[in-house]
Image (cartoon, one colour):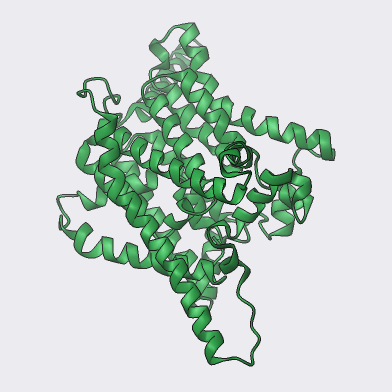
Length: 414
């Protein structure tokens, strides 16, 4: 019996060592540990061109969409076609109108109260608070706030990546995020800019072992978007790193960031429970009303590919993006810590597990490590270094323009 017990004990020790090695593998030096002090002003100046270019492209696309519609109306005077509602809404199109209505008068002010519960409260609350300098106009406040926070996102991302991997990769990450085909959502009155900024700050706090700050940012992400719950995964992975040599108080704090997103989400769901007698009502509405029931990711991808081959352009775009995102996850697994990889894996699986994957690319854009993986490809010495400027950048800007025009004309659901 003692021999069997010894074999079992040694097997447990080896298994634990493998788990610890997996958690610790490829962990770079913590950001800020030995990096020189950086200037926020210099970082802000570095991201201005990318921020400005995105706004010029999106605003130009909005103007071009008006020209296209007006020309079509002039050439077909008898059709009586009304302008798409998204074109009339402009930068507050699609989900922006829901956030605006919630900011104006709460969930009761929306066209459908139950469907409005899908939108978490932090973003419309901020839109309402910052509307007072604009005379209470939440259309203006949401758009201005989204673009100001998007600028802060680029600054924070640039600084964080510069501390992790250097200025060159940071600059390329900022540019790729700014000209990504789905980057137009950072110009519209969407909550993406806020949720991405909080996510980057949360990762920064996790990587520097500032558990309290990581918990605070995770809590607010949970109040911003339901996808914020997935932030618990990288928080848990980062909390495990080095936990064996930490004290009991530090071990307790390491677990808090993994719980914080659920607490933030739970605060809102508790209010929904009190008002509508159903704790999970927002998720059920999302699943029932918009065809977002569960499907196996691989089966859903194959269906998108099949439908795309038979003529559904939207579906073939979704299938193609999934392939690109899987490649980026492989790059993350090889080049970045495990927390980045598992976060993106979780986001992609959840996004592609829905029966309706119209917004899958936008959900994955919120997972900023995908951008870091794309930036890694542009600095890979095995690839042509000028590929970002000569090939990737023009294609990305073209995609940004096309997606923006389709969005304003009602042909693409972001």
